[in-house]
Length: 191
Image (cartoon, rainbow, N blue to C red; front, side, top):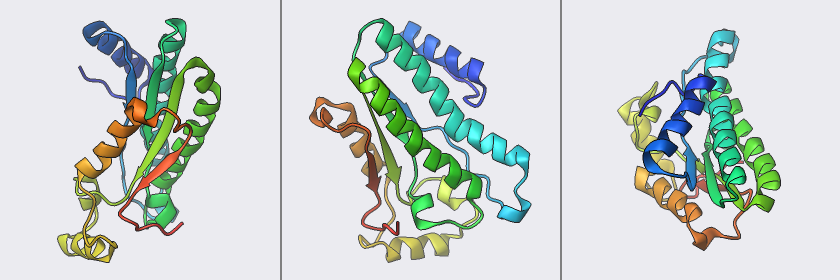
């Protein structure tokens, strides 16, 4: 299965295809994101729109489609939106990205208030700088190593550090965690 998640009709079709192939969706993790770097004064509307469409609107569309199906079937579920630590640290050449990821927080809290009575828990995770391809965009190996050393843990996050928190939120162990933004950043919090 695949889709251009920034196109609402493809995002909705992806949800339908996934449910047809795998059965009812119990857990949705909205993790699609792009991070084109541009100084604010050079940021184009086209780049702004692409970032917001991919990082925020696609999460809204997928979550709404999944939640509608859960509510119609009277089926509980969990939706986990991936935000970012970037807006809390402040990042150069990342205005559109940071705006989209703060939008995820508002989306999460609004959804949680409205969907919790239907048995749908909604939370968000804000990863710190993680050892993936995304932070390598515009950062040298030396800069990334310095970021890792500056973290209280002495390293960048690994994907499993983030995934473990997402898995926790997807389980009944997190049954009373609702509408929260959980920072997974090794203590590197500047907000």
